[in-house]
Length: 181
Ligand code: IMP
Ligand code: MG
Image 1: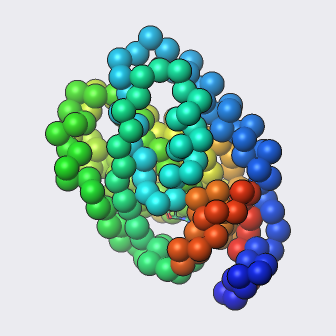
Image 2: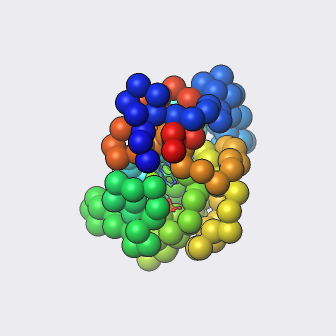
């Protein structure tokens, strides 16, 4: 990967306008699903989902408490290492019991991250868990994860922008693009 700083991407897959429309549609799906509900615990998986979640949660019309945990498996490459490291989750365990949890992530790729977080969440006794992801790669996932709210499906390539990074860079691009080869 060259990922030249001046032109790190090959082509734009999802424009800023399409992202905005997708986030708006997801927010209305959430508003319908969580109408007349108690406070929802939104659990945002860092770092990738931070930008998506902040745009999304500003558009919801039900009470939300937002918490964050970190999950990493890429270790600076474009391939999952196969093991997922969760951080910041232990302090949240007590807040999850009996709650309606909305898990928010950027992308469903191998599925290892979502499966690891969902498995851990289920040990904390939530009343309900629903998962919202912005993107799903059209591949055979190694670990199937339940997705309740999906933004867009994309082809199998490594993407950057709108929170998604390559080696910690390019999260600030306003669109989602395929990383330059
Ligand atoms: P999974 O565990 O392989 O499903 O990948 C999940 C995590 O890896 C996501 O939450 C992202 O943070 C990161 N990831 C997966 N695919 C990409 C990509 O194409 N670009 C940037 N990050 C990715
Ligand atoms: Mg992630």
